Image (tube, rainbow, N blue to C red):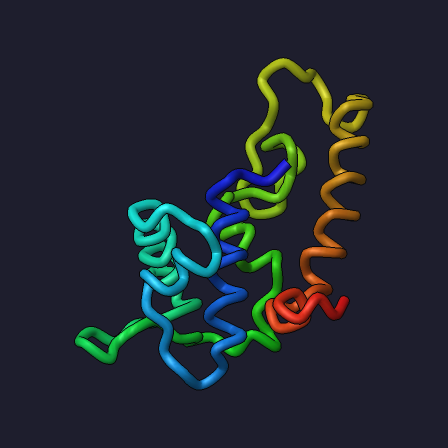
Length: 138
């Protein structure tokens, strides 16, 4: 299950991507995507720090894609907003931590199952670009 934060990040990014070369204000995104503005501002700040979007200030300011949505994958967004894709730290590629309750990962059935789940999830998340996702074209 994805968090509400991730869901809102995806909804906000769809609004920004669909505006193409135009700026879109946080208020407009909040209104169109039905996201509480304070929560949206936090999410947009994370997306800005992660160099996915950028913003221009002023009366005609707003948000725009900094990173090309054709090469930005759902895995990129997921890792930025949620962190690890794996369900357990012992199965994570980027945030690996050995389990303290397992004498051996090689003999742990849970570890093997979670690695398979991670691999399949990762295939999908890395295959779908933000552009494809925003157009429901995958």
